[in-house]
Image (cartoon, rainbow, N blue to C red; front, side):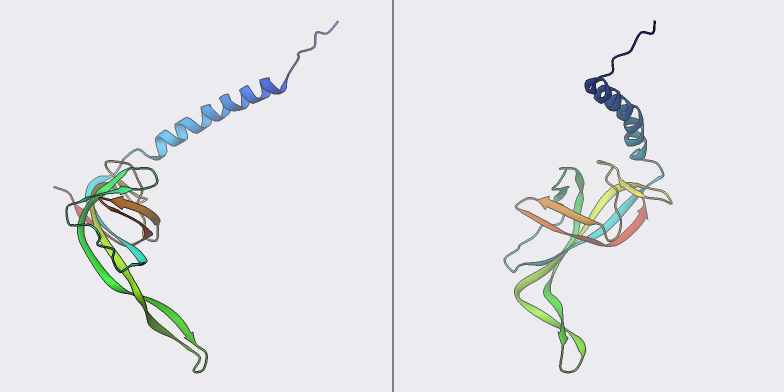
Length: 158
């Protein structure tokens, strides 16, 4: 006489959670370990079409990732530019660049200690990966903005 093993949905869920933990935890831990040489990374964050009353950060202020709260670095340079957009001239068939009234574009250059190798650049304090074209949401003292990383410079750290 064979004895039947009872297998319920609860048993299946427990086995699935254990299997996910066994495979997911090592993957998360290994993917964000800082490896490579220590460098200073200067990345330029650009926020477009902000109100003209946006005062922005001062040099030396700390910048944070507003989604996760990680420290990204300190402000090395801040500049504002008139906001522009491209519009199509239907009569002549070409594109023109036009100013947007009462709007500005802001560029914030952020300096951070990082670890760089041939595959990625990780900020040292928070293990956040930085890439050109990456969408970011940042915050600082009295402001928050969303935009993209538009430039990246790497210098050796002494």
